Image 1 (cartoon, rainbow, N blue to C red):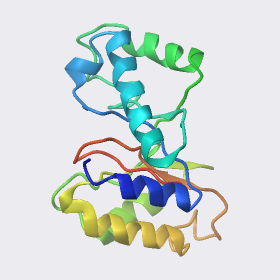
Image 2 (cartoon, rainbow, N blue to C red):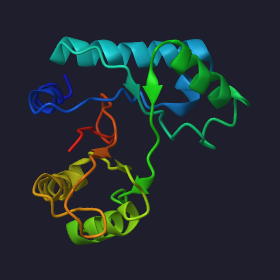
Image 3 (cartoon, rainbow, N blue to C red):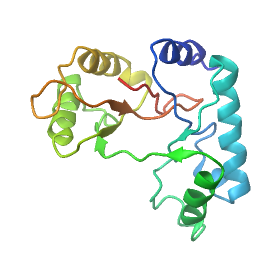
Length: 178
């Protein structure tokens, strides 16, 4: 129990979706082979199911589907992006980065980065990180999404913004469609 069980339950209770990210987030381990990746993926899927009763098939690859982190195993991401879809999963990549990973980020700077980027997209998938340092920023960000302060080009909200995906350990992304 990493303390995320109640977060997962609250996400589902609010009618949002949870995406699978990773149990370990250990790139050398999960990208060693398709079998290693699917082992990690299914473990996280089971954890989400055990906590929510929902067997999600939404996925975000650690590092994204087109990453340089996995290049030690040439071609693995091409294999995995096809394999997850063949296995009935749907993967998403982010097209907006909140920039919340840096220690110098403030709630205001994160909101400014997001609002400047979502104008370029009909649907925005926002990369956010759930870390001890980001807890206040994350709360502020979610409040802004839920109250409609963050919108596309100053318009009324007309599309969902998604924050990351859920991982089982500290320092990874937590998802909710808000």
